[in-house]
Length: 340
Image (tube, rainbow, N blue to C red; front, side, top):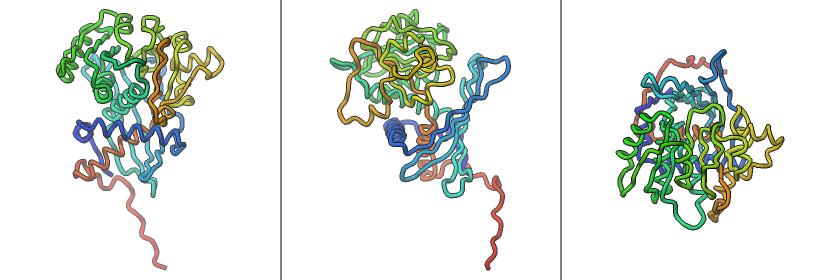
């Protein structure tokens, strides 16, 4: 069984944002064409602990090189205060011939970049009416929004004005400095907003990636025609969801686990407020535009087939480059078979 650590994964993916976007796009299209199997994610929660969780995402992704496997991802927000990443993950990939595990891949970078690629594809599929956008607001100054910005700049290189906000002002300033250092070329300016409302109203492209567990933003501060990339799923109030044009990755997956979209479904009694899926948008040959009079809300639950798509990309590159560590003796030795 091949094992790939975080350093291996990063080296194999760094600088290959276009390949990541293509892999995620292909996974969405295969899911839209029903070439996937995607059971509901399993949430492991703990008594007297509403903040921490571990999620299992099993999936099958069809195609010329089909993949099956599972991501096991923990979210422990308190890690940040200890200098650790909030999320940690492992992805197991299984053989489609024998079912045996063939690879164990560290999954936090894959998870962050597939999430960011999903948001970037939504932004590319839902351009503003009447011309290019020049600014983006990032609410939540962590790993996910850093990757969101990385991928947004691939599909929207004209973004030169970046506004960031976090409840922790020190964290926001550190994030600003990191973004300016990494992405500050081409006259790009990064600044810190004084409030979430200010950030929401500054640009017509917003990414929400916080650790909120209950809705806290109604989007009233957004300008008409704003696209909100709601990657953390629990920031927007029911009223904000129901007032928006809603795009999701998969209605069955996003309407559960007390996401904002799930709460809106519970309140309204149906899913009729969901207008389309990202897979449907990616199928279109002509680029659409978002409604200039309303807020458009993209709420991706995060599908396991996206993790498999990037794990497959990593494994192909690792095998070609001879990267990773092969573990022998992990599985039982094959039994001898009779000759007669």
